[in-house]
Image (cartoon, rainbow, N blue to C red; front, side):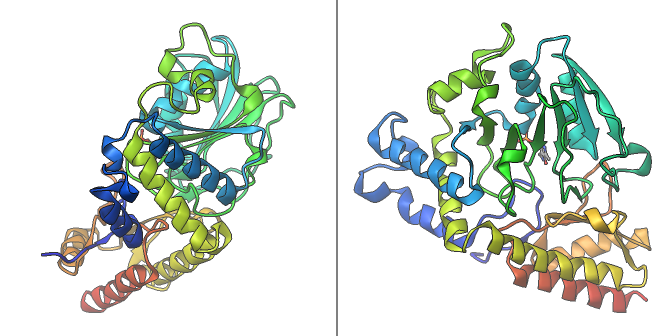
Length: 364
Ligand code: PMP
């Protein structure tokens, strides 16, 4: 079959259809260069034009100030869990982590190897359904940075606003892997923003780091060359062979997001999609449930369960028959999860909501 599914995967996730078709038409022979992007030298003028446009389009989208560098790296967001403390701290330096889900917890655990991190707030006891009030936790006034995960992909908890580091010389760092480019962000509030591409902006294999330039250049001596921001910054992300095709795909997505009118417009679409899905859950009289506190529910990842948990397998199976796939919740939490990133069309969410209503009618 040539028909495409409605893909609710958490990542790698759906990409915009027009982006895929553009990549398809470029694949065999990129703009008359006689080769595909996969076959180009990363130092040739063709690829340089691709990476430079990707960066400048991303700068436009997020209004990235000039005193920030944009790096296109590899190793996933997971590699950044180590790169951050290695680049920003000495081994004895204190740093603070607000942990609102599994990813923040993983970032904290990795940092333990390279500096002196502390969890200043954890939502674990409440099964990661909340974001703390910003005066509800004690920051270390000497912490080099305050780290948070802007959107917890598994638990569906999203920061709508951000705390300010108590240390005037400290910086805020956010893992935005699962809500990157889903809404406007004031980059100047952050020292570092990082994101794996494979949810909102491209295929896996590209990790984007946006870092204030004055934070670059103090890596611990043991830092591997591939994790040293200074090396990548000085070489415009071309120190070694970058993930060329992935960067090209991200560039096509950035172009598409700009064509949609930028991130304010994209956010409106995302709000609309999320609203109809959360409304369907909340108006189901308990048949469907979302455990996350309403004010911090994610626009990107919507976890839900069934009151009759024994029907969950059937729900997922029947949805798949109607071409709605990847609705199973993460193995650590169970239930269902609908990931509705930028590339999920409104019609896809509408179809899911219609199916949920029909499923409920049949089972009550
Ligand atoms: N942080 C968040 C919020 C994520 O969702 C993920 C991946 N699901 C990661 C980090 C890890 O990313 P990667 O697999 O790219 O290392």
